[in-house]
Image (cartoon, rainbow, N blue to C red; front, side, top):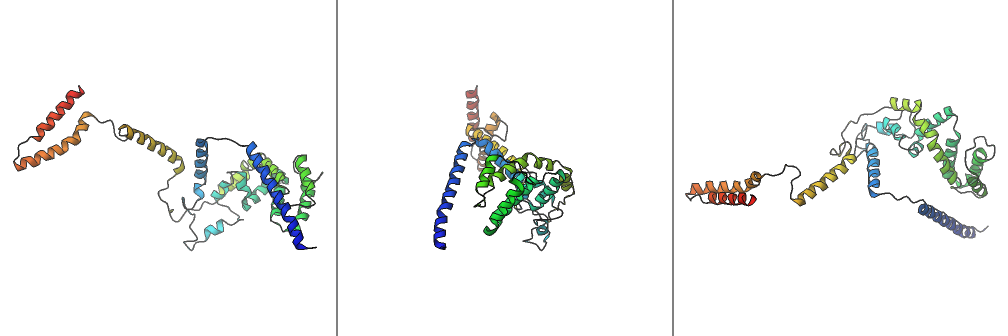
Length: 307
């Protein structure tokens, strides 16, 4: 077989398939488009950064210390993919969403323990097998795809998952020439089922509560780099911006937002201060006191105008 002809014939097929998938994605994005207000988007972004601000070593603290600046390697040991005792911040991050839990190997291990006790391991096993297919060599892809089909998708499979017939039919057609995204729709459906069923039960279980209670919480040995970043920074930033806008509006109107309303006596005080200094200098030089009389006359005229 000529390798060059095989390469040239396979490239247009891959390109056409990628274009079809891209077109389907764009069509779904247009049909399922959700229109949100800019204020809601701003609030969601602030809430997102407020939740994850504790996990940023630049904004917060690098607990227990930064291994790039010190000789202490405790942080590297605590942040290994698989650890016996995960930190409190790490365990708390699993409760943000199901994606955070499934992306952490230690979280997947603890989630598997709960699923075994709950007799609901088929969904998690299917998800892990699909991830294995995405990272396996091309020579093993067809064999592993058939194993996943026999264990999870075939009729009367030992660990059959709950998917509809449309997705099952598409997978059967692609088993002869599988690719890495053969189980994409089935995986998406199974993740949604885990979000609604096993994932909330895991967060409410005694296993997760014990992990969160017994998790170590290392104290930072050094303060953060940005000391001016206080708690609830993103929450107070919106209110401070509103106060700033209010102060700008009041400044345009001629009002002072930080001090009470100026009285007539307060308004005449700045003009009286330089007049007093002028009188003192004139008296010391022997000049007649004419400035004070002029200032008193101007004050009287202003009072008459106000009346």
